[in-house]
Image (cartoon, rainbow, N blue to C red; front, top):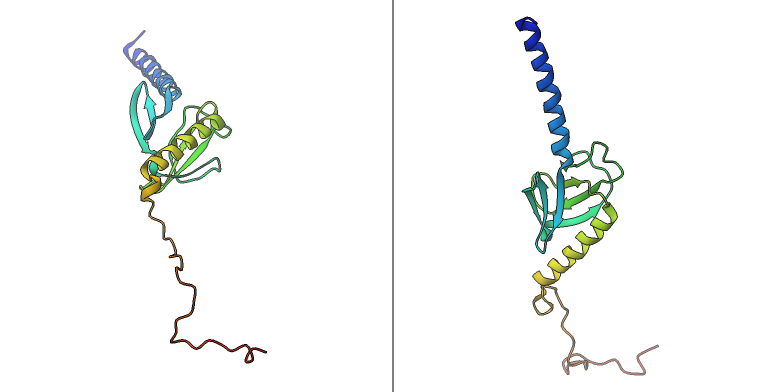
Length: 149
């Protein structure tokens, strides 16, 4: 074999091995829900954290503009869209193996994080004051029974 043919074969081997490595690494993306974060792992290393308090809504409606962390090539049936409150990319798309179970787990962890962030005594809700005296003040004349028709 001459030098040119060896270089072409080497280039083809490098391209196919890079494509295989890319597909393998995409399949190694995993997701984990902790007490405070949704974590995305790639090759066993955490590379993305989303605070549970920052999650606004979890659904499966497809979106165009999103930060995508799929671990499959065809993600239409396993897709979860996480809508965030803050950030450049408001939508985060993940593809867990069992999306409905993962959504339920993520919802439970999110509700627990919201409950721990807002204890019952420190909720910042506006409460209407309860009237203590229901009688009319003396300065306002009361209607007479004969005036009412």
